[in-house]
Length: 106
Image 1 (cartoon, rainbow, N blue to C red):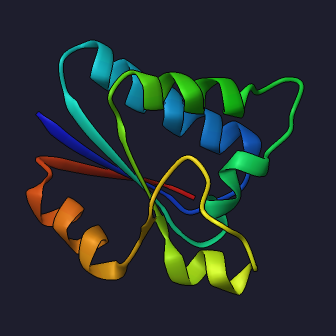
Image 2 (image 1 turned 180 degrees about the vertical axis):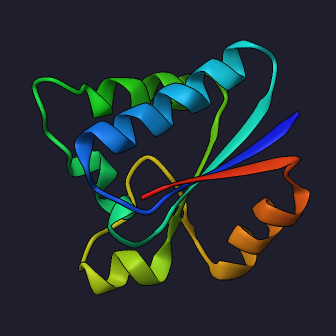
C-alpha cells in the first residue's frame, strides 16, 4: 500500500505519533510519503524530552520513507530545508493522488 501522511503541526506529541505511524507502515512493507505543511515544517526544531521527534524522524528517513517540506511554509518562517527537500503544492497533490490512503495530523 502507498500511504500519504500530512503533518500540519509542530505539536511534539502529534508529530511524534505521525512519524511513528510512518515508521511502522514502512516496517510492514508499505511505501510512505510524508509532506510537512504549515507549522509542520518546524518538525526538525522540535525539542521535547518526552517525545523524541528527532529520533523517530531519523529512523523514518533511514528506513526509506520519503519526506517533503512545503517551500512556501519554510519561506514564511525564514527557514532552510533540512533533512527533506523543499517541495510544492503540485508535489503534495501528487502524493495525494498516488496514495491508496492519506492521513493528516494537525
